[in-house]
Length: 526
Image (cartoon, rainbow, N blue to C red; front, side):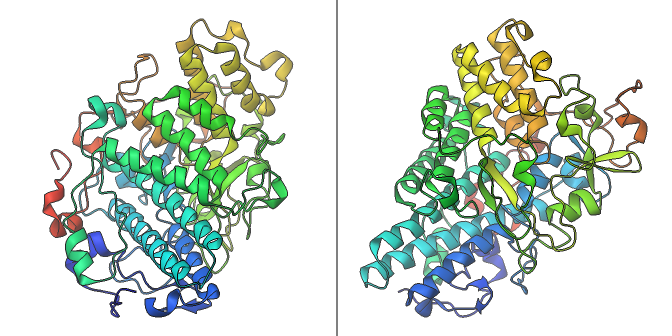
């Protein structure tokens, strides 16, 4: 085993790359601060280190000098992907100053939200890499069996893959920006760093191209599908939704291929989940009974679990931010969209919706006291709509329509008369547009909006292509009148759209990373 660096802070200069390099430490009670010579010596300690990997995904840190194992704000998978992914788009409104820099795109290379998306993303990736290396050594020494080791390694490769994919959507142009996706992506890190020598070598690592990143992500997801045994059974009762599973790896491949516009492979991967998952009859079911445990329903594929003692705190957890503190409301842009029918169950107050002073907020996350709501990373409804879109783009319109309706109909007051039919669209482009709007309604406040804006830049179907960050309702107070569907209201968008060619479309690489590795190359014009 490599020598451990016993001081957590190696140097402020290497924080950007090595904020994730103190990592042979387990930040999860009841076992804390386990040094690497001990971390992989018993099955119990190895399992505890794996818990530490998930803790890094759920909580993260939000300062340069970590002082608390639960001092983070949910970067990157615990809450931040929901809050950042929504406030970058136009379907929510930032009501106070908390997300103003993200909402108005006034960030810079030192903005904390952008910096810690990167820092905590790579902290998690490094923890995964260290877990993979330590597990391989433990297997070679007979501490654990190969089967147990493979399961851990598969989970870490899954988390490594999805985190790189997430970072690409914020810090790199979409896949089809250049022919062959040869434009800069992010560094794809596969080496665990816990020595000065590794810091020196890894800190100089260049950015992989987007194509290289996608290839590596796919390889990791394929390995995860093959290696993970946790929750591998198609029997729902045997699945562990709060842990990575082979099903989660498959589901993410449908997302990966959708972003790559590889429609046939979206269908290949989605078909693997037939019978393993099902849409819940009640569209609210994936958000019920999630406090303190991972969600227990037929639709949730992978969620990040929280508890009263391990959560992103009042400054990051989903229920305090989106409900109790009312920092982000639903935008009239989506609320008043005609495709979202007035009697749709997803408008139901007290169930999907929380109303304060006439303003509408999401009620998908409800535990404002203990902050135990799980963060819904991916659920089967997304896979179904991914497949619907792929079929529509391939011209399989009947199948696409059936899949779209399977998600939408369960929310309709009267599906017999309100369900989409062949008369609802004239072309496959029209059907794709219906599917994309349904994604906005179905996944409101689940962090999916930015990824769709990002991937739809210069889409070959010009009627659905996005051209950058959409125009938005004014930051701050939204009048209650905006949410009364029975009366007219004129929506204004004084926050101007930002074209995709603008530097603000991408987040800048953190300055602290550029200080450590200027050879990475900052995103253009920052």
